[in-house]
Image (cartoon, rainbow, N blue to C red; front, top):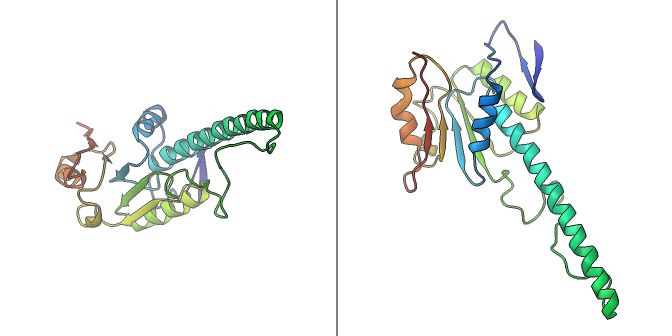
Length: 199
């Protein structure tokens, strides 16, 4: 076993049992930036997490930055409120937006505890599935992620008609999986499928 580090992501794997695909980092980051809060995202060929891990790590860092900015803004508002209250003889605490941290480490009132996102990762190879789960935990991005081990044309029926984005990766002849990808797209407001077969 070995651990490959790339762009802040750690990939644990056994190169004698699973493949590893490096590169395309800028494209992966671009695709990750397309995912919006509240969406359901499906990675149909997750492997050990080639795209899923980078996308989730990027989202985690963006969320940390947003929390930091919101905390700074709230602190400034509280300080300004305290100054005005002191001048009026009111409580020095003033009025502010509550941003207390819960016992789970999540900030209350900042959306669902699934990082405002549900991520579904499908993988047929059970060994890759095991490494995917381990890598999600290793990189601390396992919250809100559903790993489905099996043929993506057979598993995940509970997600049919519920996905906002479906990523099909870059593999030869992915056309035979296109029907399944379309089945996963949200039935009410539609969605987006990334379909890029290698010719």
